[in-house]
Length: 287
Image (cartoon, rainbow, N blue to C red; front, side, top):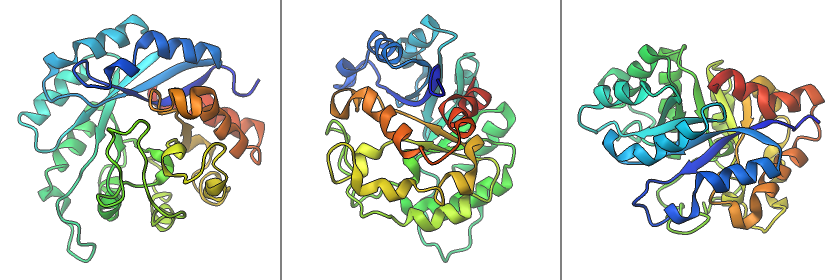
């Protein structure tokens, strides 16, 4: 089976003091993965800037060393940022970092000097460590990302949520479970794809479809977003992965349906391409 032993590249871990901690347990995740023939997963963790607060998450990773890898959110304004990134990366199952903001300058016509941006420290440190970066930025910041992709060609970068960007005005707070992003499809991301796909160090995670569809499962209103010209033709299967966004999707639409959605949207590609998206790309990049 093409999708047997696949790798889920987007699971959300929640810090122990979060009100949503109840919805995430490593045991529940393993149960869902086993039921759907998913072998490994990458957990995105959005905790504090104090490594001492991450004990529960790091213990979860250590309990299944062969099955899980972790990505930690970092903030460009955090004190002792470089030291923090170095300390976190010492944990052998942490493979990279999540960046949710790269600039306060949102005017696309201004001259961009990335060395002067606070996020530059994140990119340069990731380059030195060999760490992967997940760029979960607002649409207004997207024009700056190619400058970093070009300056740091050895930094592997993942664009999550099927390249549908957040906007301050349109995104509903993650207090909602699952969160919703109220944007019209296709979004402004359609034009950004044409630029980002030119950089060989840029990867895409097909995930989050439940959050920007305006319909219930099977999300027929966003089918065209997953046409070949938007993803497989532009990036190639060896730069595409999939993610469930568990636990937000554990009840609606359900873990199995998040995987089925990708399978159904990828019926137009070859079995070899599906295998890369299901497992091989993530295995080579993150494990």
